[in-house]
Length: 440
Image (cartoon, rainbow, N blue to C red; front, side, top):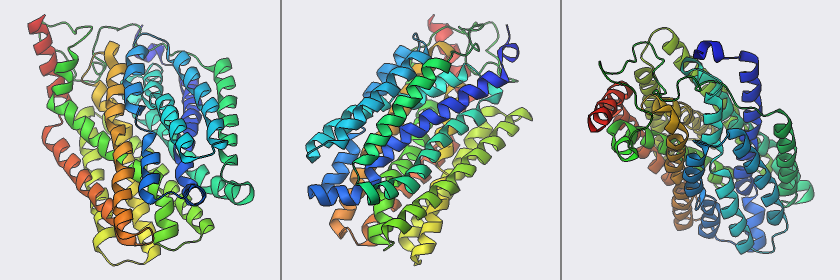
């Protein structure tokens, strides 16, 4: 059975819709703490540095659990893992709503991060079982926009709920939403059929022109050490890290930047936050459609995706640098931030597709999990780094926030240049094959 025969459009896109809602809940959980930063810091008398520590604690076990569950996903149905995660999220919201101090919130966020860490790689791995390689860019971008939809919903709803019923009620609502999704997935979730017919081949072998060296047979598995030390794989990790860095600082510090540094009221800050998210959603979808069309029209999947991602990262870096070094009004700063933040997520959406062109299908889940874990280290680092700048300059001083953004600009530019120089999926796949066959 070929992948084209196994592909079932209606079932595939139905699963995509469910996983988009799954990622929406995932990012609602992530952003909720940042959206209630001002009242929470006031209630518990937290300094910016202390709040940055609590926000970053979400990622302390995030990467470890991501990798561990990724290896499990190589052998266990994604349907079961996704259900277990969603139930855990729902349960862990309630202790935050009832927390009597900052320590309790920190502990809950650590556990919630461990439960949410594997969400994206397991969702992508499950989605890849429904779509052949030539059709994967768009559905992955769509489920990534579940994250954007979650951020948008948070910007509109959380300030309203906080204003009328207090910040704790937000976490009760999140728990109920997670429970509802779990019931729906239990009834409707299924495993996709693609990949079962070619379990030992390379994931990217279906591309036109993607052929193994003459006389070789694609191995079922490769050495993780050899794969992880390949320059192209390291470059994929770096572009992913830079994308998650931008996402991490947006989630954690954009609401406070809008309200405390730029002087917007809580309501206006929430609306501007929603605007930033709205700008980013069509950008990622549009860029993913462009990438998919390039592949369909004969462009090299790897090179087309790499060049597109690199250009976006360079442009985002230039815009973030402008916030720190060009005199602008508050409204102009928000507009520039919106465009700058809209571009790096394409790296998160396309990186798994680039990576899976180079690795065996049976190791896809674990490699995507390792990629996500490495990228999400930025989520632990970025809030703390920006928090240190903010504390040094003062919570109402715009300079502290923008120097943190400038550090992100340097990272984005570096990642783009490294990708342009060293990220070559086709050459790396061939080299890994030769090395593996020779050793074997």
